[in-house]
Image 1 (cartoon, rainbow, N blue to C red):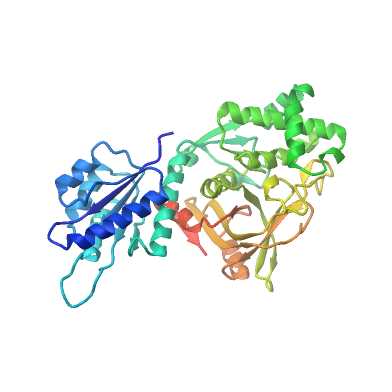
Image 2: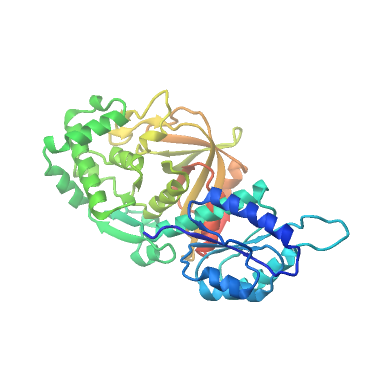
Length: 447
């Protein structure tokens, strides 16, 4: 994977007030270097097409921050577009530093109109634009979100996502095809039969799996209470999945679960997926590849495991939606007072599964990569907070108080035909995900 790079292009012309422009330039450089480890900045303002062209020579950016340090005509933006036809652009306009009835010092806003007019002629995707000084929080937040989105876009190009087995009957919304994963997301799709991993697991000795048992025991509570045969089979399955993930360099995985792992293998895969999520591999169940991709995106943006589950309960008084699944949430999401408790599956009565309520969080993002009824991709985004709630039902659950009306959110997403699986991302990833949707020219539905 190439190193992520941002290039900062402060364009302008020398006929405006360069002292004011250079003040903003220095402040912008400082802000950008604080947000990104690898940002390419010029030594001075780029005040001619030749200077702009020379600075871009040899660069291989993943994001362009095009700032109108002063007014610059559309030829500047066109020069950038011709050199980097496919690289995402954030257009940045600066405030006038002084309004005193005297000289117009920057005229950056008019320059942004010129640049935007040119960019929209070349590009189909929505334009990212921010107006304001580098000292403003709104500007810093926007620039940070777009940088994160561009970094995620690059990471997706190196992602290997595995589908383990087929989707259960009636769950076809989770199935992915290679072409769909590659365009627009750039993700490589791997496929493996669930039976193949089961057979690998059966072939391991207890001694070969000892380190996996020790690891699982450290992460969970009550694993020793699970019947011995199920314990052994679970640990073998853990090793089989971990070996496959390592061998194929898998970053996200969507696994078949019921009924095969109960009826054929005799032990559920739930806790294996829980631990994979702890290890940084976004893992969903019911072979929901788009759910796994949604989790991966959130995990890349926040550095924390994401919850995967169904919206199962609505409380209008609390303005909350409860997300739940049978028992495969990441161990690290468990409430501290309970820990990642092991139990048995609510319907099949076989373990180990995870049995806990998830920890509270000031900000979470509800997210889904899905398809509209006509087949085009869309990103659903909503925000809220995870409340301090104990386990709501057998399995794992998180209760989210949404920023918007929870009832209207449920009503709208059902009427729009969204899929019944969502990622609950621990952290505020909404702005970055929206920017990513724009970069991918994909519909964004934000509540």
